[in-house]
Structures are given as structure tokens and as C-alpha cells.
Length: 499
Image 1 (cartoon, rainbow, N blue to C red):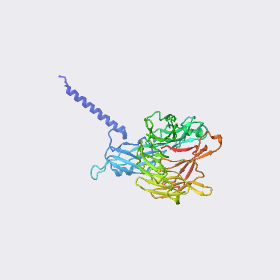
Image 2 (cartoon, helix red, strand yellow):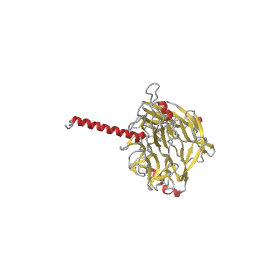
Image 3 (cartoon, rainbow, N blue to C red):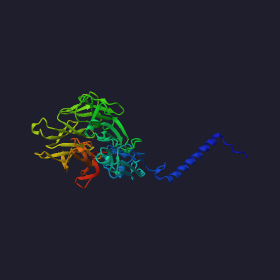
């Protein structure tokens, strides 16, 4: 009997057939065992969620769901559930669904996205598409947290970070430095601050240096240094110049500082520091200043008016607003600002102040005229609401002022008083990124000489204590229409929210 002889091509064919059989068997077994994660799928599925397992902030406004095939948009929108609910609107581009939030996401929460029961687009007229595989995604908003300058015990003069969501506290700066002012970097992982050596009192204001310190906030960036709190870096020394007011751009890449030459006090100017570059003189003089939200221009009080200049040396002004003497705050998108008119050109209003809403379309809308003070105002993220700390003159003989918070609805043009305070000396206010709470302080001062080497207020008095408060205004989603005032278990001043 002749033996069967296989030619090379026969061997290759048999090998390929056996391999294909193994693949087919494996796929059949996998289809039975792998459930919704198997390779061979019957229905459509979500391929990706841009916010999956991420931590987002108030400026993150939309997530995108990408499907593996065209979907019936009505069935997707009907079955998409976000828990807790976050109002928003849908928009489609092929297989991609964008969900844009109507308001900033509230901080300190975990959110789940559920989608089931949605169908793929009809293949033929009258023939329903297949039902998708159930999907669940998850993301978190940033923790609700703040920083402040402590006033007592081991916290005195030091920068303190407090996480309200997790109820923990960190002292970020060393005992030998007394912090005067600070600002968060946009991701919350660093804080820029000015400080002088301990024990210098009011003299320390002439010896300020700029530093930055890590907060320990995990913003999703793989940076071992930033994830460890309390790591300090010197940004600008005071060897040749005295450092005064400073401002940090919204993108965190530019710092502007007012500096005075130690050898020649008449030589004062604004200086710019860009990341990795040496300080650069802008050759711009003026009073209070602020970097605009686009991080490209600078608003400076110059004489009787506000000048708007590019952030470059010897720049020609882009605009000048002669009517206004003080800039309070920019809307986050830079399209508008809150400004104060001191009415110096009107004899009938000479001793009154007017609060104005000014936008880039030329609108200058008066919101309030008062005999009292306009201390501070802050826009919500959408620029539709303005929260202000104001005073009302209640005793003209003793010139006694009653401080109060007010809310201005800029679309309706209406003002609503929120809460009245007993005192307003050196109060700093900070509106939370999600717009749900105002943070403010009430400073306790003393003129006792024993405290002369301690913290000092704007008026030169020693700061010996401070209370931190939350003001929670009513929203459309709350049943309670009353303002809530909550005292925080923290002793300090100059509080600021984590962005």
C-alpha cells in the first residue's frame, strides 16, 4: 500500500485550516463567557467617554461619548442618565455625542453616567436597530477646598490648606515665613505667595519675596513633586527691588509684580515674569492692576481712569476708560468687568460712588449709586451674576457704615440684598468656582504695641484673629429661599477657594 505523501503546499494548507478552527472555537467559547466585554458583540456600544475616571473643574464644560456605530439619537438622549443630575444640552457629530453643561459642575461629588436601552440607527425603513450594550461611566469633580492665612498658634502667619470635602488640613509654609498675600495656580496644584521673615511686622512689607508652594492636590498630572504638599520654590527675590502687589495670569504662565528700586524710590515700575524667563521691566507705571482673563493684556489704574495695555514692554494702550477709578473684577471670559466711578466730575454726586457693569461691546450700565463703600465684587463663571460686598451709610454724623452682601442679576438688572454684617474691616471675599458659596473673613485687630511684630492689616493694625464664613445664596434648585451663613471651624483671614 502506497504511503500518502504530503507536498509542502498541502502541509501549509492543513496548518492554516487547523489554526482557523482553533480561532473559531476560541471565539465561540469567548462569546459565551465574556459577556458585554467580548470581542464579537451583538449590539452597539460606547467606545469612549472623555471624562471617564477623571477629576474635572468648573471650567470643564462638556464630555463626549463616542459610539462604535451610528446611533438613534432620540433613543440615546432619552435613556442617558447622570447621577446626581447635571442639566445640559445634547449635540451630535456623526458617532460622537457632546453633552454641554448648563452650569459648572458642583464640587466635591462623584458622578455616574448610565446609558442602556438606546438603539443603533435604523438599517432599513421600518426595521429597528439593535439595542446597545449597557454602559456606565464615572467621573469626579474637584474637592471643595480652600486656603487661608492662619492667625493663631502654629498656624500664625502661615499658609493653610483645608479640604472641606475630606475634612483635612495642611500647613504649607514654614514657621520662619509670614505670608502676606497669595493666589492659586489654575490647576490648584501650586500657590503663588508673597512673604517676609517672621518678626518683622509692618517692616516686612518692604522685604517681600515671591514663592510658590505645592498644595498636594492631585490634578491627574504625573508630577511627583507637585503631589507632595509644602515643597517651596523661590520665584523672585528682593535684593535690588522691593516687591509690592502681584497678579498671576489665568493660564498660570505670567506674573506681574509692582517693584520699587531700593536705591532710588522714584524708580518704580511693573515687571513681568514668564515661566523660565528672567524678570522683564514693562515700563508701565500706575496704581492697582490686574491681568485680564485672556492672559494677554493688563488693566492698570492710571490717573483718573483705567488703561488696558498689551503685556509687553513700552506697549501703547489698547483702550482707556477715563470715567472709572477702580477695577473690581473681570468676568471669567474677559468680556465684561465691574468698575467703580467715584463721580469726581459731578459736583452733585461728588461724595457718592457708582458701581458699573462695563463690557467689550461699549455698554456701561450703572448698577448702583451709594453714599457707602463698594468693597469688592465677583462674577459667577458664566458672567451673568455679580456678587458684591457693599456698605450703606447709616449715620452721617459719625460716618458709620453698615456692610452687606448683594446679588446683581445682570440679565434682569435686579439687585437682591443677601445678608448684613456687623463689621467690614479688611474683608476678603472669594466666590466658589461652581458659584454655590461665597467665602469671606472677619478680621480681629488690636492696636496694642505687644503685637507689633505680628501680622498687620491694611490700616497697619495688628491682626490677632479672624473668623472664616460661608455665605450660601439660594438657587433655583433649592426649596429654601433664605441665605445660609455658616461659620467654619477655622481661625484665619484672606481665604480663597481652590479653582
